[in-house]
Amino acid sequence: MSQSIAADPNRLLPADPGTRSIARNLLSLVEELPILSPHGHVDAAMIEQDTPFPDPATLLVTPDHYVTRLIHSSGIPLDRLGAAGSGTPGAHGTTPRDTWREFIKAWPLFEGTASGYWFRQEFEHVFHVDISRLDQQPGEATADAIYDELNARLSDPDFRPRRLFRDFNIEVLATTDDPLDDLAAHAALAADPTFSSRVLPTFRPDAYLKFHTPDWAARVELLISAAGDGQSGYAGYIRALENRRQYFVEHGAVSADHGSKTALTLKLSAAQAQELFDKARLGKATAADADVFEAHMMYEMARMSVADGLVMTMHPGVFRNHHTPTFEAFGADMGHDIPVPVSYTEALRPMLEDFGTAHGFHFIPFTIDETVFSREIAPLAGFYPSVFIGAPWWFLDAPDAMLRFRSAVTETAGFSRSSGFIDDTRAFCSIPARHNTSRRIEASFLARLVVEHRVSQERARKIIVDVVDGAPRRAFKL
Image (cartoon, rainbow, N blue to C red; front, side):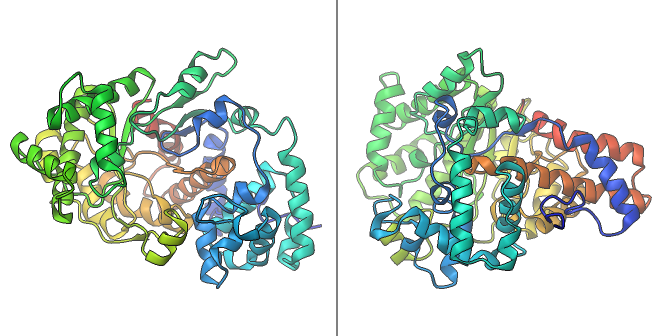
């Protein structure tokens, strides 16, 4: 039988034999380096408790909006993919095996997509399941056979998160956490002498900064009550955020993450901020008020990062829940969050004017608007010592988009100003495939520069190690 394309050692490397040879040499320097994952969404409790994985559909299909959105576009209802108004897979009479069959029938839809590549890599290198039969006949019989193979693998006592943490060679993994989370799982892992890796919490305050968040007022009251040091109103709110950030620092956090609507930052007076805050608590704030307050709080988050040392990351530019009927039926994160253009240069200026050269401040902007990589983000990172270029994120974390990113930013900012690769995933089993992909793309890009006599091979060997290992340690203070 011919070798699986997912196992081909030349996957993603240049087609030209000479360039490919250089790329393979560069890849050999980094392919086995430890994984540094400073931004992601894996549940720390799953690792701490060594929770067994669920069935294949619940693990790989239902929670992955990359997957469900494309199948849905072919006409398959979301409830056939495990989605339900209650958020519980299996409602509407659909079993996990039914969902898996829909996925396998849709297998040809994923050719050429990032999702298709991840799946091939996971099946080949993590689950050790031969899926070459899918390329010949993706039908119900094939679906059931692969489902049963995967189920057997998932039920293996050795196939648990902690064992895979070692097998994947993960040195650092950051989670994303609510400001009021007690971080008990993180504390338990840090104190566990049998667990040598680092699982770091990340401060994610979006639900407390955005007026339109469901139960925003109740959340804020709870925040102030828990950590406001007896103060009330806006002053108590700011103090509570500062205190909870410090709690995260004490539990190993290195960054605070912000899914802002835009990149806008504004410096309001305390009186102006208090007025907007009070309007929101009374339910009288407008959409424009919410945007202004959020922009002000991005400035405040930067101020706090200068004080407490947390790296500030920002990823704006997404129209959330684009299709209202789907949102009303199934809730958020159903695959209809759509990218929109974002401007960074003027929007970030109030923040960077005050903090862009502040000692120790690290700010990492991400984008899914490719037009700003070379026009705005790379030039900002090429001047401000605080700004590091966020890696391709979400719709851009695909092989061709990664190459476009590297080409777009390097001519202006070089290699040293990037954040390192960010897998940004909830899919724990896809982590090694994602990082291996990034390493192959970096090797391919550098090999081309070597062949074109733009970088020496000796320098390329040092650069790729720094891009893969040095950059994330530097940008995220690891």
